[in-house]
Length: 444
Image (cartoon, rainbow, N blue to C red):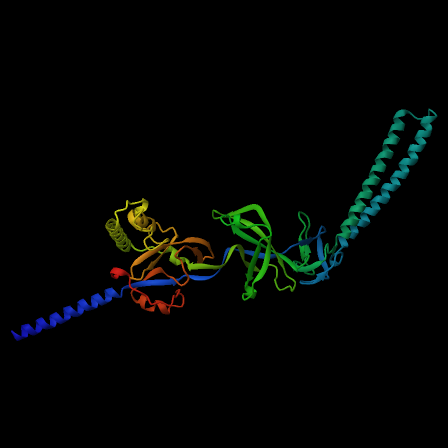
């Protein structure tokens, strides 16, 4: 019997321990995560990426084919307009010039011969010593010879031009940012002019060709200020200005983008062509406003908490009605307030969830999660809601305003469960309000 009683006692202790641990674990399974309403500045920006390019670039090619005989410039060399950049072997072009000159001499001699024959035939024709057909033939032969001479002159001019094309000159003042040939390389200009050099007019003024999504392009305007960073100087922010919003769109994977040209000053020459720039276009700004992390505006209580919140609202409504009836029985006005009993809309003040018959509607609106309300705990630790008017956002914080919104208010941004609740306050990536985490009502 004693042994049985001993086993029963041990079992009772074990069951009690399990119950205690279960209740203790339930009490610690979850807690609120709070964020503070802060005062500060906000900027709403549109982010985009683009490539730095010179404002003016000229591709220097060649109209002559041949082997590169000499190069007079290299990468990064400063050049002036008319400066000799390279020379193509002119052997073939010189031969073509000599051939054209010889052909011109031949046609000139032929013209002189045909001119003398025409003069003799004309004289005989005037004396009735030559027929009309002989006169016409002599005149025709002279015109053909003169036409051949003109053609030979054009050929000689073309050959001399081709010879001049073997010398490549700079068309502008600038800097050589690309050289595509070396001495001994053969270039062929049969179908298109091969690219020999790329010259930038001036690197002190550059531009960014930024790709902006169609959903944001409506907020971009000419002369709008912008800022950007490049990987080479990650700790610096550069300034720019919108020069042009191009109408032509591009589509990739069903995403439509537009090119925005941002003018950039580069007096020190630190920014180089081809750098990738991360651009931010400032579309709106606000100074000294109340703001809250976006997580607080996105938070929605679970269904169990919403049910408890709705029931409490209905109970408060009934208590107000009873108090109003006892005080004077004033008729109920719209939204449940008494027109003569002094019950104010919203119970504790404007911005709170209204009491009266609007409790169901308020709970329904709260469940929509449209970002126009903050959830928090009242002085009794009960879940409550404050209406706010959201303003601009920078992607992390949103400007808010409202009659009951104050700096330092603790808004609920989420529910931390299990071991995460213990370490939430020490997480460097978690917004901290300086307030201890509190367990949701009902052990949720």
